[in-house]
Image (cartoon, rainbow, N blue to C red; front, side, top):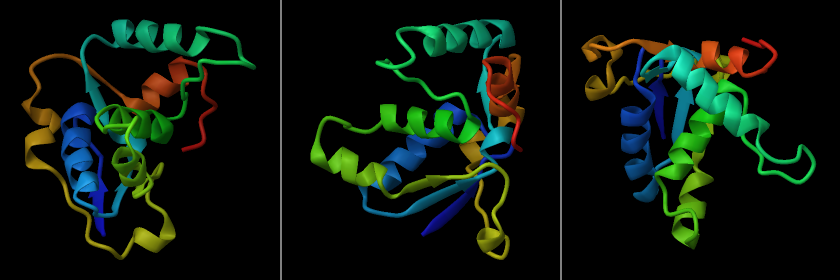
Length: 140
């Protein structure tokens, strides 16, 4: 079982590494999902995700997550072979949390060096800010 800290980490780069580990059969836990960052202009990211959330019928879908932990899970899901059994089984081994739960405070948390946001030369937005702008109630 690996515990990753998503604080100041780029979502796409981090989730591609996590997807590879899930396909190998490992259990992965991600904490501080609200502090992960998406690179790009914040207004553009907000409008893109806002369109996705408001698309369709609220009762029949398509459904798209609003909270940071659910957005992170959805990004990882997009990097797995979801239409195959091995992709669905791998996805079951992923747990994503907002902040750090009590049971994982003692565990050592890893960071992925290649996914550090300090390497970005562009603007970015955190998943927490993105989710509050697309209509999530703040619970972190």
